[in-house]
Each structure stands twice: as C-alpha cells, then as structure tokens.
Length: 264
Image 1 (cartoon, rainbow, N blue to C red):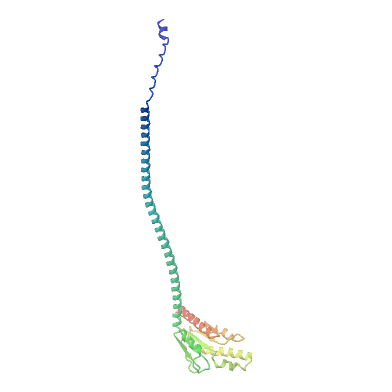
Image 2: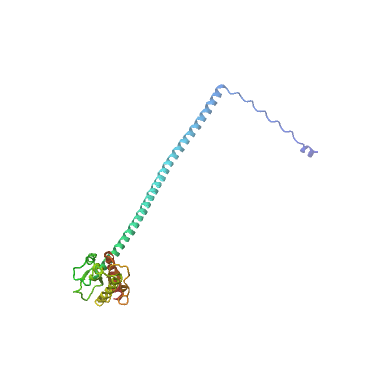
C-alpha cells in the first residue's frame, strides 16, 4: 500500500507569472535613441579609420611594388639592350673580319702571283730582224717581269730565261707584204716551215725547264707544226694578239715556276 502511494505522480507546480513590463518614459526613449546613435556613429568611424589604414598600407605596398618591379623592368630593358648591342657588334665584327680576311687572302694571292712574275726572266726573239724591239716586247717589260731580254737575228745566244717567246708576227718572212703574192697553200706552208725552223733553233738554246710561247698571226688554217712540238718540249703555248700574248706569257711564267719547284 505504501509502495502504491509512493509511485503515484505528484502534480507539476504552475510557472510563476512574468512581471508586467514597465512602460518607458519619453526621456528614457530619447536617451536610448541617443545612445544607439552614438554607438552606431562610433562603429562607423572605426570602420572609416580601418579603411583609411588599409588604403594607406595598400598605397605604401603599391609604391614599393612599383619601385621594385619598375626597377626590375628597367634593368631587364637595359640588359636586353646590351645583349642586342653585343650581338649586333659581334655580327658586324664577324662580317667585317670575314670580309677583311677574304680581302687579305685575295691580296696575298695577288701578291703571290705577282711575286712569281717578278722572278721570271723572258727571252724575246724575232727571227730575220735586226730592228729595235717591237711594241709587244715593251708591253711585257711593263707587265713586271724580272727581265725581258730582246734578241734579233744577229745576236741570238744561249737563252737562260724561264719563258722564251718566238715572235713570228713581227718576223719579215711572215709579214703581210711577204705573203701578199702567195697562194693560200704557199702561205700556209711558209708558216709551217717558219715554225719548225725557228722553234728548232730556239729549242737548242733554251734551258731544260723553259716554256716556249709562239706568237703568230691567226690564219684560215691551223698551223700543225705547233701541235707537233710536243715530242720536243714538255710545255709550250701559242698566242695570236698582243693582249693574248701578255696573258699567255704570264701563264707560261706560272707554269715554269711550278715546273722548277716540282723538279727541284
């Protein structure tokens, strides 16, 4: 019985009633509004101060960044300009060097060729003539050979020159007057005989390593006696005009020079 009574639920006490709010007076309302407005103003002023501080900090950082990056860009431009300038100077120097070296090589080759010419002695012979040297002999002298010895019919001696010129253009036997009354065959035979006779005379007086140049007017038929000289002499050439003669004698000088070095 006691257990039943003990387990019987007890009634929950009712909550105490809230006290009634006291209405605010007009002075309290005004004071509340003033305080709220003051708090709002203080908060806004603090916000403005924070924004000003952030702007100042950001401005300072911007100035530093501008200085740093501005300086870096300036340095980059300067370095780039220096690199470009160095590359341009290198290209110019290389091109100038190459051009100068090419020019120097050209001058060296020219000097080398002219040095060979200046070491060459030419023996110049006109058969059947006792006259003064023809113009072609003078032209060869001005070309720069070491010496040009002129020989006529009466004073021909043993020849020591590296190049020997047989002048049949100024020889009386093949002059235009001497050939005027001859037929084509007769004129051709006279040319052939003149080459054979005079070349044989000179070959007996020339050095072993001399080059023979035959100077003869062009004709309608080829002078075969010139082609047939090969068993008697290793190197020879023919010329048929004054300009051609100067070039052929110079080339003969180069051949004689090379021949001398090859044998020695």
